[in-house]
Length: 104
Image 1 (cartoon, rainbow, N blue to C red):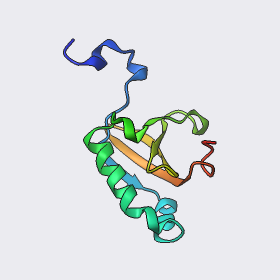
Image 2 (image 1 turned 45 degrees about the horizontal axis):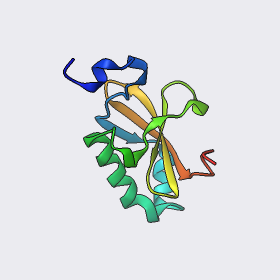
Image 3 (image 1 turned 90 degrees about the horizontal axis):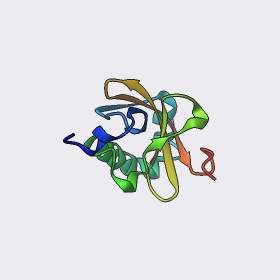
Image 4 (image 1 turned 180 degrees about the vertical axis):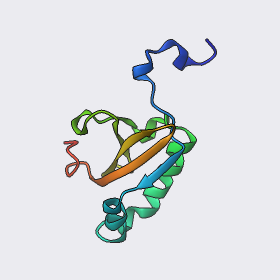
């Protein structure tokens, strides 16, 4: 195998990230309560697309929200949850503090 991921069980390999669409709820939060983290969120999206395996993102499955749900770190205090929609397409369906999203 030429890639490390070729040695892993396919269930353990993070799906590709090509496009991240924001739900209406996420857009509303970024215009209101969480406008202060919008630039950090934009940076997180770019990093995910460039290299979803970057350790600082802590991009991982989020089983509490069901199959295809993942969590990504925006910064020390905030995370976003995304739903894998196939073929590199993702929907960011919520973002908030670690506590709000059930990480504590």
